[in-house]
Image (tube, rainbow, N blue to C red; front, top):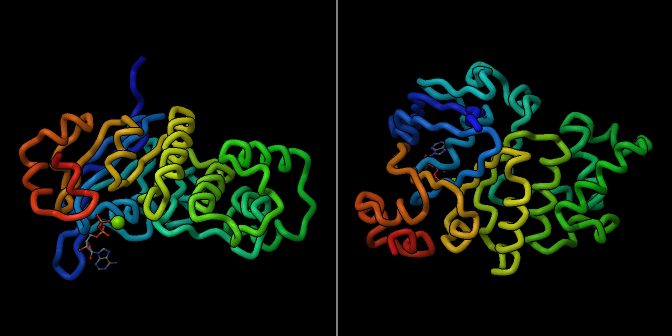
Length: 255
Ligand code: ADP
Ligand code: MG
């Protein structure tokens, strides 16, 4: 089967006060693909997501989604095209139930109040329960989101992206702060969603990256240093050099 490109970034550059956080970046993602981006802190990973979602604008280069140029669109227009983002720290509505959080995802950010004061349609209700089943939180539907465990909040936020009907899911360091068991369940969830959705995951935890088993892009100083299987990039001399002497989980990339 021929691969269909979903997201294209070419020659993308973004400077902050003269510092190039993203430097002539070229990046290509196929429809249905699961891709993992790794790279040291400050490599520009989150900035790349900011550029895709329209949170920041590039100084140069193009980013296209399904052939639509994103760089001239506003953040909500990009969101409506079907690009959903999960930030590093979960941002669910703690005072609302798990069910209501998914409902809010369904309606989009503009419908927050409207959706809470209207009766949900049977179709909406089915859809909400489908999403809750997918993320494994159906039994918690009526519980306040604030009472969920950290991992469950992350899954709820992924569920909100599913409710939003996002075709492309941008997931920034989902395993951060998770237990090993939660991390593994998160991997299983993303693997289940891949294919139906296109998923871009940023991650440091190499056990998790291995579980995902996807093609890996190594970002360094805002540029793609190396791409390929995890084994391929871990054996690349340049990647080893970049990670040498670094502490923490990311250092395992050089192992
Ligand atoms: P990563 O996610 O790979 O750790 P980031 O994309 O967060 O890296 O950051 C890349 C570089 O860009 C860092 O040096 C960071 O300080 C800088 N940066 C990111 N966003 C901004 C911003 N809004 N203003 C100024 N500097 C920024
Ligand atoms: Mg980051």
